[in-house]
Length: 586
Image 1 (spheres, one colour):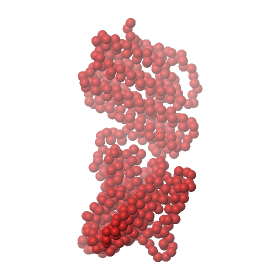
Image 2 (cartoon, rainbow, N blue to C red):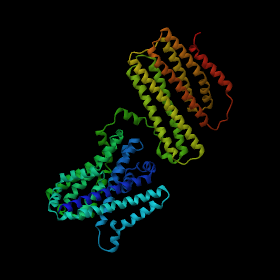
Image 3 (tube, rainbow, N blue to C red):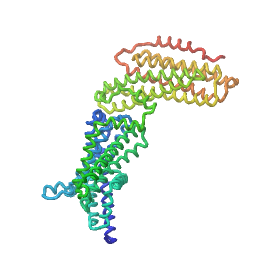
Image 4 (cartoon, rainbow, N blue to C red):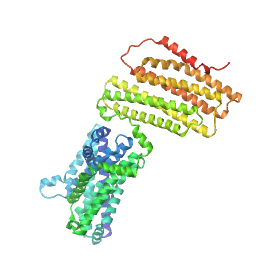
């Protein structure tokens, strides 16, 4: 082959590969856009059963490639929408679904009668491409334009396939190339080439498609096909593994499920196959492979893998958990899961909203315990490690509950509901956010106190008493808030708002007394910032309680409004008298 021939081969091959990969990516991304956010809700319904998940993963990968599907699974497991065990069936199905691309590409190798030629992508692709372009030009809706992009992407992929096949056809006359192909029949080298090719182009379907193009042009033996396809299926795991680097441990476990399945399946097949070949010989190894034969082998190994590994999915999960075991924090996180927030209830928004209402009550109880535990450790300078650990655990539990409720509310908001239900959901979301802010504020104050004590800081006895009383006032208001929410009592909600009027006055007097102590040298000026931060923190917590009281009044229905103003004045006086010790001295 002369220099011009080599140049034409390289440019034609690179052009074909570029078009093939570009078309596949365009088609995949456009199909993902069409599916939109509906995939998450569908996945919740089908992945509870591993075999249904396998069917879903297979169908999804037929349209969007296995790499896209597995990356999506890593993201869903990482976000908590799916559990690691739920991803097993979908991952195995995704590998099965990617075989559809090889079967579609193999149609180009068909020949014979007119009707058979009509099935070849090289025949119908030009008409399909023109239809897609026309749809892009005339369509008014984004959805129809996206469908046009899918069609054009598929057509470009087919054109790239034909271009690759035509470009490498002259190589069949080059002895050096045939010698190189023989070297790739070495199982170890063939697997490595398959892994490398898939890693570079980020698609096992594309790598196997290139192999099919070579089979139709220059011819390749099954001795090359078998290790290459096995290597390509292992190489496709790299995409999910790279994505998982930025995810949490559950996301990494989902990627490991995909990796272990492909590595164990393909290596096991290779060992058994080549042991048989070494013992009795397999004539197939030396025979020329067709595009249809490559697609058939690709499907065979995936069907066998599905049949064997679907029932053994729990073993894959255990293996992954051995490699990446759950930490104590993760175990605690699982224990802190609000199981009442079941995705099945989303189909009935009013019932799902009732679950949120119950879950918010559970969150309120934990927040109440968290603040009380914080005050206990604050009152004792030498709080032991066990007490601090308990406080920290309560804070983490409250934060997890709040996050689970927030996500569930977002998912409910995507359902159809009447105005009353939508209003209840909105108030509940705001209430959850208020309890979350209280949690965050307590956590922030704990951090400040820990740093303050570590640096040797401390308060005078009088300053400690003032902070303790202010904290007790905040605790009392929070207790009434939680009780009012749990009982659905509007009267208690009004009491909170009555107390709120006194707090600003109390806070101002505390600050005046502290300034007086600073000027008198009773308190160290270095503790002023922390003292002020704690006071502002308590008032902020009471602000959130006041906000929750307002939401409570809107959430509690079915009771007539009554005038409690006289009773409110009485409780305000009792509250003011209770904390009168905070009055500044004239």
